[in-house]
Length: 187
Length: 187
DNA sequence: GTGGAACCGGAGAGACTCTCCGCTTTGCTC
DNA sequence: GAGCAAAGCGGAGAGTCTCTCCGGTTCCAC
Image 1 (cartoon, rainbow over the protein chains, first blue to last red):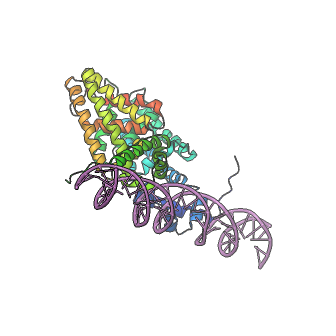
Image 2: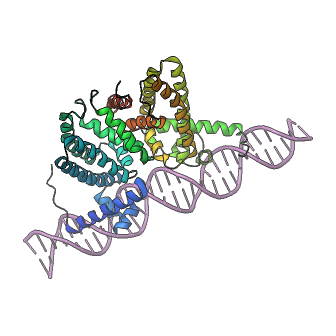
Image 3: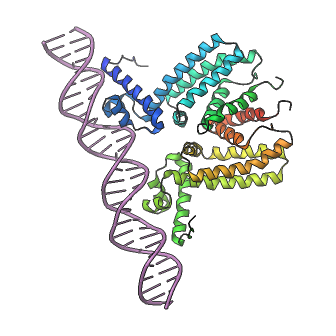
């Protein structure tokens, strides 16, 4: 592990400008916004963009991680605010709203999961941590089956979101079915 | 509705060659196989490919429809072979294996659903028809909740597949949860 | 203030999608 | 089977996007 020297002030500024522009562009044009266009919006040259984010996937992953961190943090707060079962359901709903708001970003990210991008692996860790506590508590309160694992929940939610990207009005309904499938049979 | 004159013999041959090459290329390189490469594999010029399939999406959709028709037909056969509950489960599993075998094609197709491609709308109709009967029978036999609709099933299966594309070993497990969620509470 | 490392930006190489059009093939007519 | 119009072919190339390279500029430690 090499010592990461901090970025120079102008470099950090530019990196931030690119991130902001990228988030806007991805939200607006879906995952196929052109990188040169993002650079233009950010007011930097393409070279600068590519130095900070070697390729489209890196940029996408970085934007995604930023969002994920926010979500994880909110999850922690939910846990303090609500009783276990409620907190769990709220978190799912929140996940949902987020991915819905990002039309297409989710799909793009999913496509990259296979590439083993380190940033995305990190994202996964963050999410697993965020859901872990919520899940354990919901299980202890008898709301959720004991054999359900964090990864199951993440993937199911992700799946429902992906599958309803083109029909958001079905999302709640499908999420309901999935939640029922996670409850103990005797509940 | 204009009278569709049949393709000339050589045109039909070429169209078929392109379809075969496209299926191979998409399976092999994911949805981002280049069209010029597909044309080369098929032994035709790019112009020919583009005359038959005006753009990447049309080609992808056409390959997909071809597969869908096969799946629907198999669904009909399952219905004759097995009792309702079994047929339903078998069909889900089959859907599954298909989409798994197409690594990425599913994702690509899903991304296009928003574009309202006529071919994909048609695909949807075919699938809905195929699952309709299986579902109704499973519901009549008390295996599945009455308020579940064909679209719910299609999307849930699709969602699970998409979400497990990078972890196929979880697919069965998650499909199990989802199926549980579709069963009547008292079952 | 100055030296040099870090960083910038844009020209341009390479790849891909898709179009245009002169030439070839097909299949109908006699 | 010869002739002919329509249908189809294929490849050169225009337009666009990704990503690289490097001469010039900016920052910061001293």
